[in-house]
Image (cartoon, rainbow, N blue to C red; front, side, top):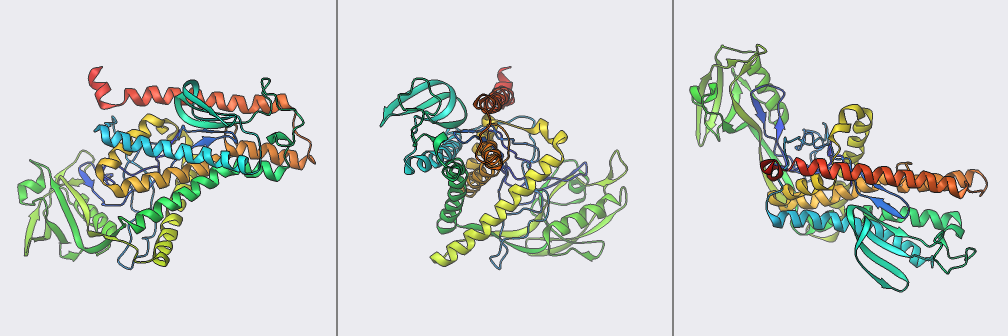
Length: 455
């Protein structure tokens, strides 16, 4: 499973941790988690090598999944990217199992979509597998082999259409290849449809149970952390202070703008005192801070900054409210996924190195699970949406690739491409995904902190 964590592909580690472009400012933005993921699958297989650029594991200001106090999702106005860590630390066994369970459930849902669409139309199915490669465990029921396989890169539903060992006549009308185009399109599309429905249900459950985060903005900028021996520490700033004004200019109530204004004022003042109006508990103080000069000539004071917001939860009071909140959240997440994937393709040379496989996805999911349950809901919803979107791309080994072949058949007046050519196209795609997935598993495993310690 390739996941594009460039946006959207799962905010996790702190669900909000923005690195400011300035050398000594870390901006902590308490944004809610969301994500982007990319996946692959064919009509009978879904590959779970998600292009998951782990490069900004915290959201930038647009694409926030927070709600404002009017209970309307905040507008997404920035890059939906995730912060890259030097190494991935999986952490507790429970959080790893939770993340792995989410990933497995998404694969099962996708493949079940294909499977049920075929069975409900009376189309012959021979295999239902989670994973690829050698079989680890299997059982047979109603002439279908159910199996778990060695490589956790997705799954597939097998059809006996061209199986030389099958005793079904080649002209049987219930073979997938002999069905009308519309029947085949439904089977191929059903995995994507299942993931979209599953994503909406996950959001609906969250809205109806634990609730969605709501942020209420307050004036000023919060200082969560002050570095020791920094200018801020030397001149008296403390963690927990709220900066209300700089050089007599009140900071705006909008958190991201307030942080930017404050950072710019400090950058422009190396070795010159900046007068800060600070709220500390119930006291208002005036503190002069003299920024140190950084290597590029700009000022720095050595603090982390965060929008001054209060976060609460909104839980739907009735079915109508639940469906309304879920719709808005689902549309917001879908927009973020589509936008992040667009950015990934437009900047592929920069994002290619950030593609990660199932090991990295589980590592990110484990961090989400450790952070809070809200993130895990969003993690699952975004993965589903990503898998759905990526599978529609017209590439071999993806559902979109199979749909493209059917479209070609329709344009040719019902004449299929030669079977050998179709099989060559699809098998090359599957082989590429498997090899890429194995490479990513090895690379991501070597990036795990405890593996690095062993090495």
